[in-house]
Length: 195
Image 1 (cartoon, rainbow, N blue to C red):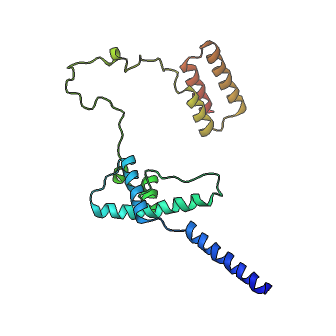
Image 2 (image 1 turned 90 degrees about the vertical axis):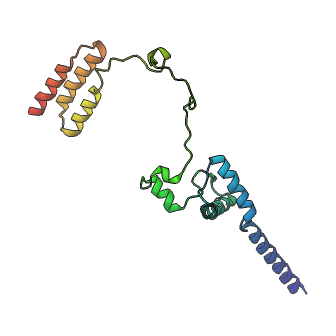
Image 3 (image 1 turned 180 degrees about the horizontal axis):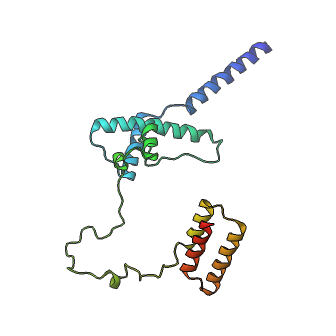
């Protein structure tokens, strides 16, 4: 009697376990996925050219959405997956886009613009952008490139410790007093490159 009761209990636990597995691994209903797809289309401004393309993208969306839902249902990761603007694309399409093999316009992503005067009807004949504050004053940038010169030299010539010391002293004098003219630096580089 005790053995059959144990068998019944084990059978009951197995049936409940299979039922729970079926519930947790159920496929999402077509209506639910379609509703989520419609919400996603509104959120990301996606419009398809035809109903056939929409149906194809819906099927891809469904596969990716089920993958996201099943991954998140396990809960054993420190992060969760979420729907983004690429969820209606296949893995190959996304990789082609990410690796630069596909023109970004082929993805038909909505282009958001920060330009707030799209529909201006009256435009003045002349406009001084400096007066509008859109253009900054010209800056003295004659010093640009000095640090990149040192980088270039260190990479393309095997600079000795002595030459590093000369460059360091020149650069330090320049930083402290601004006294090292470009010609001195160029002459120093020229002399060293001839050695």
